[in-house]
Image 1: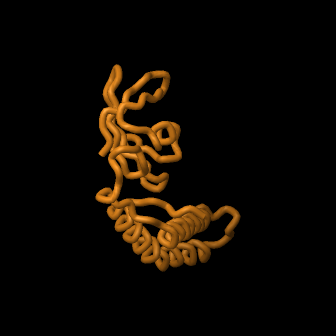
Image 2: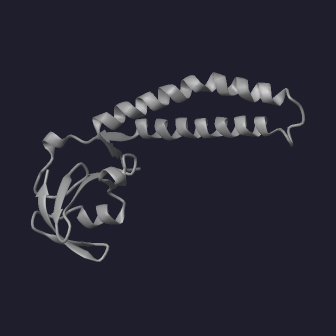
Image 3: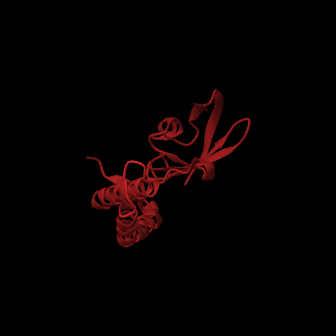
Length: 147
């Protein structure tokens, strides 16, 4: 399994998320037990809601623990600024200028310009060099900067 590339900031966020999810366990277990005591489980929406919350919390814990067991920190100081890679910020010029930071799927946040290396835009940019042209959504762009 390939290592998940993440920033130091994302690593710290994941550690905090894991801590909060683990701390939430006893309260969720209590809500499940309280709802269970209310009677017939078939029609007990509080019970089903608490069980859903418990399932989602446990899933989150598993996901974060899996990432924390298999990650690699992206170190921008060691990156080449000649070729687009995970961690690069790419400036494009065309009819409308754009800038994207290439991140792993764990950190993807398209609204804030962070695109996954697995997304069509990320895949179009990975491995490209300064001056290369790419097409995004039918529009042509030229790579004007890689940081």
